[in-house]
Length: 290
Image (cartoon, rainbow, N blue to C red; front, side):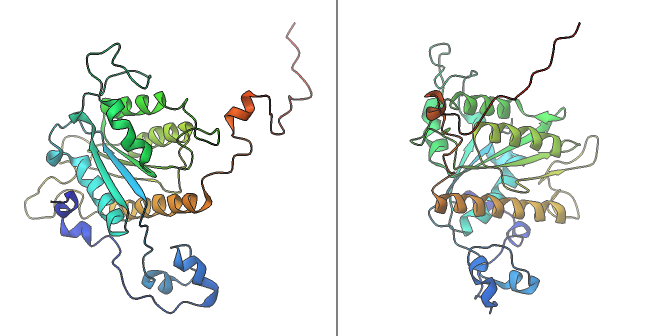
């Protein structure tokens, strides 16, 4: 069974369904065909959703919960994956805590640790056009599992593609955060900064999340007597989850069509060979005090 078959119906309704293309003015045709901006709100609402066949996404769940079916973060990631899979994206899910990923910032830590799953997991990261990292909030921060994933991603940042760029160039990142107190934006800031520093492209509004009221209480997806599961009725979460999912797909498709980012100015191999791409030291310096 696909994991997205488990996504509750209220979440399935949040994703666009395929409909017959509406009549769109000629000036809008190119943008509408690729899901771009359309000034006529009614045309935007009724245009056929773009198809992103051939794109690949990896959704990494950094929950501390061992059973993926008990993970609150996994539920919100499932909603993201459902939107993507219905758009034609090949979606791969990774429940990180199930794998013995060793600590460290080297590509392979088996020299220092008895086991390290990262070398076997890395090809799944490398082949994905889109990487979405999901994490719960603990004490206002991402989980320890999430920080380990970031560290192991960093371990690969010295590797270059054929154009002399970081291996992560041309790939797109996003974040999903859940918790029952404040911290969604702070945690998203940490994740998205780390991903862009490594080379991922971060689209607009590339994060989504849900938090409950401050203090002890239900987490996302917990059943509640007499109402929908916690968070399922949040228009804010539904909207931002949908925006994030589509924006990472739109951006990944643009990069794929463009063949990645231009190499001028970011070819590290050329820089090491002496090319400076227009950089010159400042014409002045600051005198020492005294």
